Length: 332
Image (cartoon, rainbow, N blue to C red; front, side, top):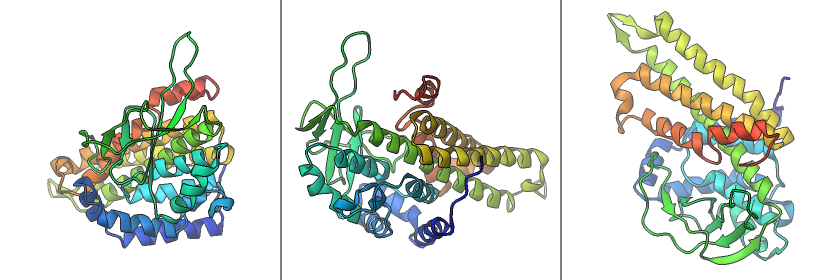
């Protein structure tokens, strides 16, 4: 099946691309990695003004209504430019709040999330992403596995974070999260599944954007680097590696758009594993073709390499997503 975006959607993606290109995101990422969020929050506001977060907020709370396709297109561009911050977590938290029976938290937070005045992080496990800059910190108690009765999932407001933990991607700052502490907002929230699906979908979109950026940067590099007096881009083996990476990324694109249309758990899981594996494969190819310079933190390529690896397991590892596909969509 062929999925085509319309002219308005293409213009939306192009406007985001132009805005982020002018934003010097590598400098923003490096500041963010050091815990300096000033330029990152300014960029966050501009992303919000473009309407990205409003795409996950109902119209009743000053949003545009949930639009998974447009969110997917936006997150491809956010990944292409490696924009830091709890982007996925903010749209997932907005979806979760919008579905609560008690609309008090929704009235309080959703307009601020849509406008960019507030950012949110949502932890489903022991780590919370960028909890030091998030205005709203939510935790979900993990389900208990096994034959015994499953403990109800609890949604809580998390207390202020402690010290950051080591992270594979320095721009993804992790903080310890304890789902047993904090104000209880809901037990077994009915909007949990849509929020987790949206988190998985937007992570996949982000990964696709990261992979596309890595491919573009590597193609440009092999057209300049010489070995034995010849551009390495002319070597057949190099062409094959880049062609394999492009095929993998382009194969992921229709799966991603199809999942955004259906929002079926098995479709979202398939898109997640395909996009993230394609981005990870492209990252390995980019590193090999760049050589030793690709390992250096000072070289911008590293900002995308580490993100491709981190997104691969965020909101569902490859094994979890494959299991979800095989089980007919059961969220793991």
